[in-house]
Length: 397
Image 1 (cartoon, rainbow, N blue to C red):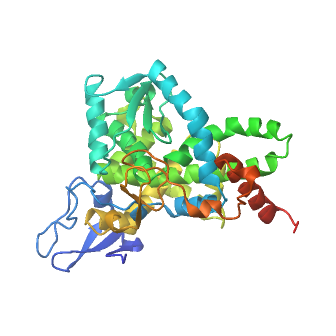
Image 2 (cartoon, helix red, strand yellow):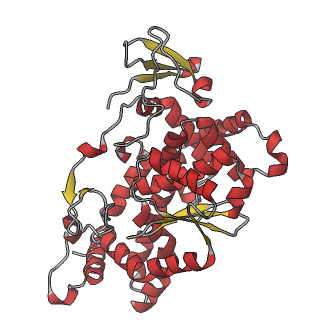
Image 3 (cartoon, rainbow, N blue to C red):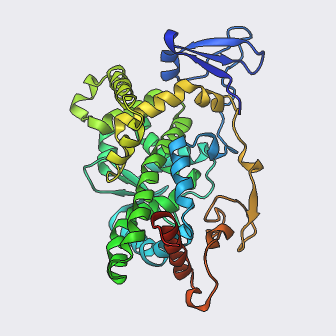
């Protein structure tokens, strides 16, 4: 997809080509960061962002996935059997237990329970064309946070700390971020990242310590991708809100906002801080990767880093292109029929969005034997991961 937008860094200008008449428009960065409606073309007066008011019914997530997310996920998927192993472990142990825990301890949100919050959830899902709405829960915790979990049945949970700290549009932004994980098919690996740490000690004990040779590299790969995936979901939230100021304001409050001082918070000062952080990252070739590894054991990456990444995406022009309708069409992506219901499922998806059935990948069996000693999916996946470790981390033949 060729870019119609070019950034003039020295002038603080983004050049954007009108899709109606072809005229080049010069848009100040400040105007884009405070975008509340589509700007008009200076020549033909047509909206420059022709899809600004539309929902993304056919948006391919590849159009907004962050490069670090794509790179880390590709590395993770190269581990033989990883999807089968994680899906089996979570489905047969954690998923039902976690769903029961949420259902028993937290408030389930719907049309009758917290309807205004449910409307925000529906709004974000509609914008991303998510047909199967996950369950939504509110849990008691003063720390502002939210997360998405599941394998066959997805659900989203948001803390009371978020609801008390944030304004209405900021709450919608958080929900849109979580639904971005659903839209981008993040949920299996997100769930695995949450539970793999607790599973790791059990696996290591059961294998008399030998399992640590495989478990720790997999855990680090999961955590590295998990942090990078948040950058993609921030982009999805921005596409729902269509106003960078809302996303940045939300991140600012999560970083250190309190209701009593909300009037004193400055978005411009926060943007300056994010730009300063960007310059610190540029001081060395590993700056961006250091930010990932420093946040490995946090629930989300640093808010300042996330703000810096959003600013760069907005100013790159790709964000404006998507709002103009210039993006990859999901319906044109390669699909295959679900073995249970026949629904067309994207080749990269792990669960059918229509019925929740598992989608097994032929490449997951690469490097695995079909002998009688490894006939169940978990054993075959574990066997393949052992071969992967031996091939990549030892000098044995």
